[in-house]
Image (tube, rainbow, N blue to C red):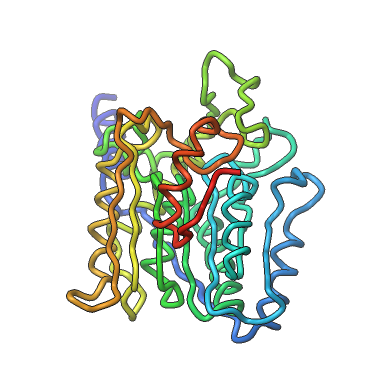
Length: 330
């Protein structure tokens, strides 16, 4: 019996603490070659939003009727939906960009207590990112990806894998949750694939009554959390597939963030720095830190989120980082 327990412990240690069962996350690039081809892909993206999806949370595309110089992909946060970027998407559209705001898998359903998050895995999430970049490549000559939280993790992965991406803005990407020590991220990401899924409340006091914003989920699942952790780990540990350099990298962190650890963010940042050419005119590398004394919480984007009362200070700061010099709160 003791021998069996020791053997089981050894097997568990190998599964959790070594990459023996890790699965590579493959890039699937098929960029649209024209505006018309991109709009055909837009139809497919919109068709993926069935009747179970909150009308506010459907994938959104702002096109100009022709190919533009710039396009942007906006990737919403973990357990939120495209409505989170509604104001910023409109600002980009007003500035002449083509805009793609995909709904991430398992997100945005009208039933805020759905268990749809249990059905996602890294490949499903990165596939939506690939499809969004495919569309953006057809709608614009230069593609920017912007993401917050889980969307920031996906934005970092896309920046490392897709040559079509010229600029990347990562805002508080979900690489290491504040509640998990950094050394435990890999075991949690691996274990989440095999154990029964568990749902946890974002706010253990308010539970299902948490409604800021009203279209986001009030709880999350460990399996889907592991999915985003796996994408972040892949960005850190895997040699980037892209062959061309990034032209601009912006990383935004928040010292008062209670959701994600900034230490994990910097690990991804160091990997992406390798994609920036050194001493080349016109290449930007920007860090921005929201100071702790500002008191801002994790979501610095959503007009109906936890920082809604502070967006008149936050948006003018974010604007230049996003390439929107005159960004104001809605």
